[in-house]
Length: 67
Image (cartoon, rainbow, N blue to C red; front, side, top):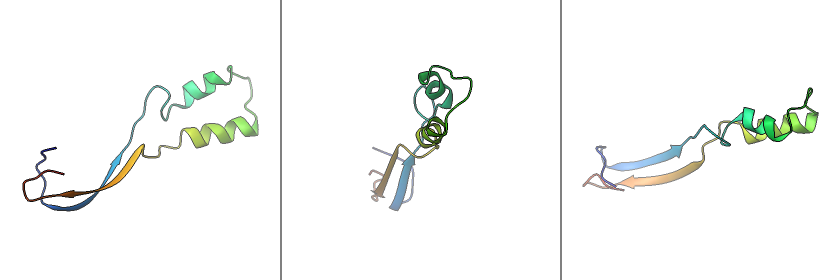
């Protein structure tokens, strides 16, 4: 992939938010919209929707600007 960056080593992290990815509302709906979440459901919501990167990778950009 051609990019406009100085050559070197980088850490690539990709984040995603949307339908079923870091989407607490869809997770809540999957619990059939309870009036009160159980502790287990709350813990699962937090785990599934913690905003973590979906991809982490070390990359090296060469002198031509590709990796």
